[in-house]
Amino acid sequence: MPSDRLLPNHCFRPLGLIHGKAARRAVAAGHALPLQGEGIAFMGVERLDRQGDGRVTRHPVGLADFGMSAASSPFTTALPRWAGFDLTQPLVMGIVNVTPDSFSDGGDHANAEAAIAHGKALMAAGADILDVGGESTRPGAAPVPPAEEAARVAPVIRALAAAGAVISIDTRHALVMQAALEAGAHIINDVTGLTGDPDSLSVAASAGVPVVLMHMQGDPRTMQDDPCYDDVTMDVYRHLATLIARAEAAGIPRRLIALDPGIGFGKGLDHNVDLLADTAVFHGLGCPILIGVSRKRFIAALSRNELPKDRVAGSLAAGLYTMGQGAQIVRVHDVAATVQARAVWMALQMA
Ligand code: 8Y4
Image (tube, rainbow, N blue to C red; front, side, top):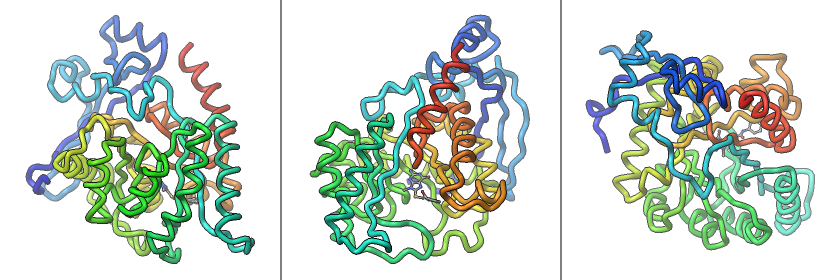
């Protein structure tokens, strides 16, 4: 694991991202560099430099100079397939919660049946991946023993995997990861980046499955109390670099790792906005980027304090923005709306 002095003190933000045919023409003419393959390119770059006091300064960098430097290679080198996906279009991950709702007393079986039906509906709506979770990470949520969490999610995963879904297991617990993988899950999605349970790294490494490593400051109970950063983009970038190094040291190859800045996890409004605006910085870590904005509070805070169910339009706006920044996966509740938005956005961007 890197000590503080081995952590990166600078990073780069690609600017002016263009897509499709215009991207290919600009790259051929030397006016843009390809972003991790063929479909996207960027026309400028700025460099973020961390000062001794932790503050960050930003300066434009010449594209030609950047292109000749070693620093450009994680941005320009095509990514390998991840979880079997070629990453040529943004993937839609649909959220399947298996948590008891306070309005029904049908018990665990009814919860599982409802989650399976919901997952099948998300598949029919075009979800590429289903993210199955059995523990609420909302502030103030009651803790669930891992054995109970595993018992909740396993039948849902078995049914949805049998129906042909690609499934990620959203959990912080190694026992749940193991049970989910045995039930047919393909991907581990851990909001603690495999730091929440001492056995998680070895479960993931032994299974050899793709993982999503997310940034979170603090823990779900207290993370929103007073989130604090020197510079949120640089701090999250350094933390994700640390999570990659830990995972690699435990035997998880980088080609299996996707990264997530963790929107809303120990972040205030300005932190969330800055991180989303800087999405493209994280391509410098050389892994696919997953972003979860769906129905989150920052949308209400930027608009008119809408309830979660009334945040779909803002979720789509943020999701399309991150697709424009080259994010490879978006995690959403509203799969049908997101799939429609992606189709229109792709047709226009690629023309
Ligand atoms: C309404 C409904 C308002 C849900 C907020 C929420 C992420 C994640 C979550 C994420 C990854 C949530 C499990 C939070 N968010 N995993 N999980 N990335 N990788 N809140 O952003 O949806 S749960």
